[in-house]
Image (cartoon, rainbow, N blue to C red):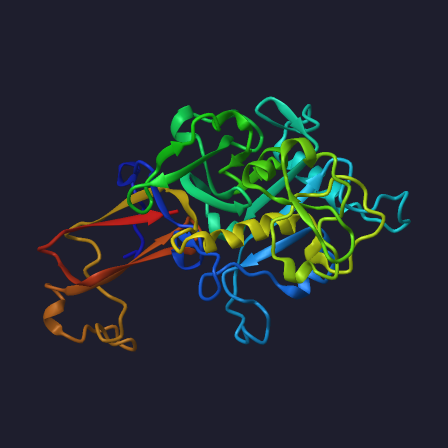
Length: 402
């Protein structure tokens, strides 16, 4: 007798998909702090001193330096980067023969990824922008998507602490639901209120139309508009190119006209301040890569927690679980014998227990799901053995989630 039984069409039922949400950060944590210690934001100094530092910084949950993380437990949570359509903030080919135009490469990369072919620039609240900040959540963190309406980004600057969320709870739909990047929502000034994981929306009056940025939840990407973010939060502008560095705070009127480097290379590592991006061409890069434009956004995020101890980058991931139920029907005359060596003598074929000849009794512990080539695809384990005989029939339900 065959040990296999084919499912009938009525034995396979597809269940309604179930949406679940979990904390986005490592360990399914919903909050990512910026202070020192466990769960803090950290960058790797070797990256800042390497080629990739021209393009982006990875942000870790613990100090990733080998001396402080010998077991390699630090995990990338997200990356921060800055892009300029013309390569602003970096040497051009006119300045240096070997210039790689990293900020131009970043802008082009995200334009190709997120915008439709006819769009040449990112547009925020109807106004085109030549440059962007990007927070790119690590793919393993978001699972299927960043949960819309369930994240909160804190930034700090001269104007104090500001928090940003999306407007998914207000728009009742995405800005461009059919775009190649999936759903798109506005980034607005506001915060999540109520219990942990709440999606209650609040926003300061008059801030909704500032064009702070866009969020692409299906890709886990937050694009911020420096023209709106830096003056609103109060990123600093340097007014000197050598120590002592004096600074003024970014406003909409002076931001575009500044020609000073983001940091002086001799003070970059100690400044730890949110500096507005440089949009002109730099003749040469500073020696210290933390001076580059995405550092301003990173320090604004990391310093936010020092405003108050309960400020965190909150975010949750969401995924849809599809389930299929397989009803395994063990009728009274089926599956009453076993190939287990304790059931029969392999040499003679004689049943070990003679009374099993007319009244066999077996115990079901495992169900295997096979394809037409008899290849095992899935295994289901019962919580305890269940007896089966000619006098008993069983109906087992196997749920396969994917």
